[in-house]
Image 1 (cartoon, rainbow, N blue to C red):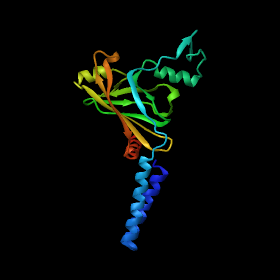
Image 2: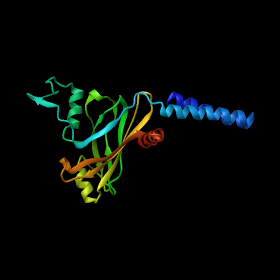
Image 3: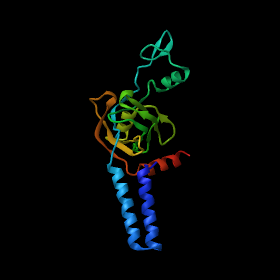
Length: 221
């Protein structure tokens, strides 16, 4: 969703276009310039910028543990049934672990490039992640061209398809609904755990994030 300032700016530009056609070109140009200036101001007047960064590729956090056959949190408190099912779903999976170095981030999800004819998908969508929340986890599911899938096995799949790096985009927004993205690459690395490391990390605004979300939602319907 666009911020209020962006909506006002777009509205003024549309009004300016209409005024230029039906009233006068000068008045329309002035209105359009004011709208454009408002949009530019909104983009650079940042307040509360999140910064979600990849930590590593690996196994899910193993803080859940069994005490006398009961799944418990790190402090020994038993999980609820819903939390138990979620923990069992996550334990043993491999995927991307991220952390937020900035202000609270919202609606975080991960997009991936392809591995030859295989399609990696990072499942999960984190609604809110702060500095104090620790690491967020996105388990990977690799859909094979011939059908079926793999829960993990990214390093082996990349080796088999002779892929050195896999481009990743972490998408999220701020509390003011400004869109951001962090791009990086998961690279084959024999010295790293699971044979993969993170490199080439860049963070910035996601100017066309609203288009990506719309395409993603249409694809999921």
